[in-house]
Length: 173
Length: 136
Image (cartoon, rainbow over all chains, first blue to last red; front, side, top):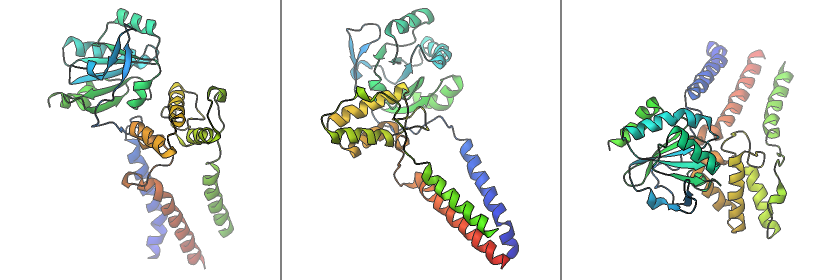
């Protein structure tokens, strides 16, 4: 008994280390997602390229699809842009852009210069739809299935690896 | 030796209380006007209670990031619509998850958060008692 007591602090210390270490391996920047398995929220916002045109949920008509939150001020969006272009060129699935808290003219110019992977981009200057989606930065990408239900949310750059691990399996459903 | 143990124990507990101290407002309060004092108080109490999703270690009132300002506007609009504190929090948890509130509900995923500290207190008290007995 006495021996056991002597090593007790060590046991507690080691188990704390193990518990804390196991938390380290969790992806720290992936917040829990409240919207998984919910249907995509309603919205009414203008089109990026035409400020007189009002877009709603029914305009996201080709499903399954990706919704990609992007902006010209977002450096990581530039990093993932070529991958989005590749998805479009290979006709993997339609991508709809959510232009988030951006300058309209700058955003249009960027798509002209680097290429436009989106069916269209929704212009969300005030971050209205973004709040309904629980967005807190850019880039973020949502996968919407055939029924219009959000299945995946990814915070950060989407690339080949992320696509294969998180998204690809839902495409075959 | 025992005195030192007890003092450090009390210090570590009071540190926990201190860290919950009030935070300053770092934004332009003039931008928000209210119909009555009840709405105003609700608004500012919610800003202290709600967490900025981007900065993670700050509440909405302590942050001037674009997302925090959007959320302030959202909270403001709900307050003006006479929504209750519970309704407003539920609205934000629906979108951002429990992360957004500093006061998460007690459920299996948060057990360690709620009960872990008490477990640590019991464990450390227990070891102090055991240690003293051994010395006596």
